[in-house]
Image 1 (spheres, protein in one colour):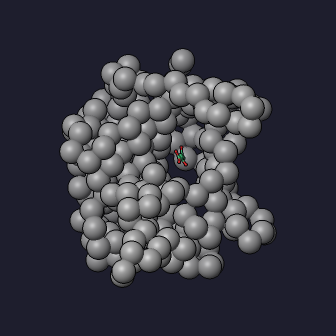
Image 2 (cartoon, rainbow, N blue to C red):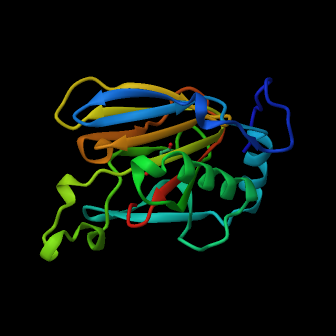
Length: 217
Ligand SMILES: O=C(O)CCC(=O)C(=O)O
């Protein structure tokens, strides 16, 4: 795996910028995304450290009659687990502070994906809200009404994140890498889907770090 670093970010020390410059795009159906290109400087050096130090797992998943390899490597840090780099603790804390009023709860978990090259990908999906979170008053499920946020910090080679409305319609594309931040909010996980498609062009490695509130996977 070889990362072609960014010419504009030669910093070895990972540093977060201000979230004040983040820009919102309203997608419709109650969904929105916030984008902040280059939130983290020193992102390539952090990529190298995480690629080397994180205990990456290859997973297999059942698909109909077969078990197939999940086309990316994964690591998951649950609530309370020490994160693999202190700047990720800072990022999670900064996101929790910035979105406190809108989210009303902290970002707690960190899921990491390593896309080794253009053959690695993630298929169309919305993140799941686990059942214990879906109990409304009297135990009634409220899952179809629940809004949440998922914040993704991208490191390494930019890859396209696609978003499309579940009810049909065209998709939009955001290339994300080298320290870019995207936050998906409102109804985005239930009224829209997202994916990182395979790339036919040669693509270098990318790591995404997804921060989520409790009970969102
Ligand atoms: O890598 C990304 O930017 C997206 C990851 C993702 O959607 C997921 O792991 O659920």
